[in-house]
Length: 115
Length: 114
Image 1 (cartoon, rainbow over the protein chains, first blue to last red):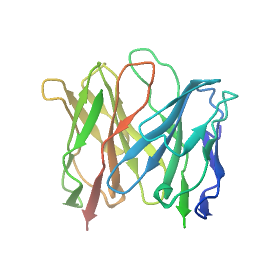
Image 2: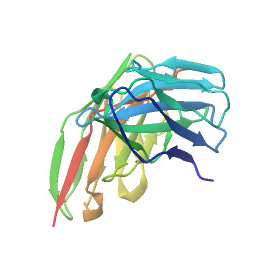
Image 3: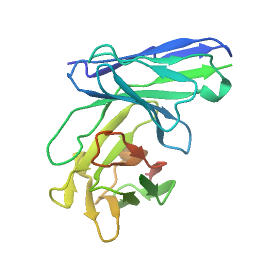
């Protein structure tokens, strides 16, 4: 199993450009989410999905869109890139478990720079 | 609502000495708690997890953590630090809701001196 795969690993955008960060998982997990990591702030939730066709906003959703048409894929779209979106982005997936929440499995991250 | 406070942003230890990384949490639900490690320019790896079973949790690479409900703490320990332990460590809480989103602490950078 590949686990959670993110592409690209690195990206440089100009202000105002749009792009899509790809995320795919092959573990048949129903839950997927996107986080951004900024120095000294840990990871913050952007958007999440509890299953195909169902998405919701997290802590910092402005400037980002998501959709989930299949269980496997959960792309993150930047509508009009801004320097404040310079960050490292992580996609994660998890599954239902008994006795409490299960751990999330993370991709390797996408380092995005907006100039 | 849920939150996590990692009490130290940086911890420096000598190789072979004990490691203590402190974490306090707040959650409206019976929480699940995790520690993740991130080596430089890498993704996040699960060290250990607490999900309402035994309060003393053993993880990989000799790490363990104790869930103390009365103190709302979940501190990470290791008896003897190794150079390869140098990394950033995140304490994470997940409330038992349908959302299943994780709330991260701000991280503790562990430095191991030779």
